Image (tube, rainbow, N blue to C red; front, side):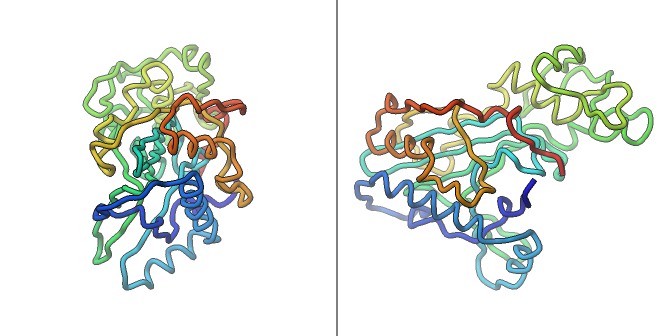
Length: 296
């Protein structure tokens, strides 16, 4: 797999869109939408590795800007679900990319929301004297403490590492108590395989559990409308939510959004505000089973 850091950190200021203080908007075009997506994509591919990104961050005395895009191959996130929601009126537009996954470095499960548009409020955080601006917000689904509550604590090291105890009966998913299924055959029917290495008892992994929940009760792992709208205007009309779409790797520098049918159709739907124009000819492939993720 290509270096994942390209998708983690990138300096970028999204076109004038990323400001809550914009009072006046003008009609936008398909090219406006595609140009902003292309700009973000190009900036993501400018950094060659994680070390370079860290060096730049630590040496900058000014505010730091991150740009994130939907990444179904992320090595630190074992992808479960993904959706895209489009919003627009005559002068404003927004695209919200949504992905759920188990974060194998953070030890929790999260929803990641990535925002694009001309009316998006930046996500601003302060840490260690720096101010960080981003187009991405994370919502916790399963906390690290909850995973620890259901962790298998018997056996050798690998038996207890990110494995669900066979005695665990429920898991708290963002305040909802969800029964834990232990029948391996039910996982296998969904293509969810147990970790093969050092797992003689075929215990369910943390990521495997989240994927099973997504497959059997997807609404539990979705962001709510209020979650999504936190960084876009409350009165911006929703056009369509898309949960099956064709996706291409963001690690291929030739995959500019404007060259992809998926993004071209997004732009058409947004400008026309007509959801019936979402008529892709390419086969949907955004299901987690089509992508290698969470393997670092």
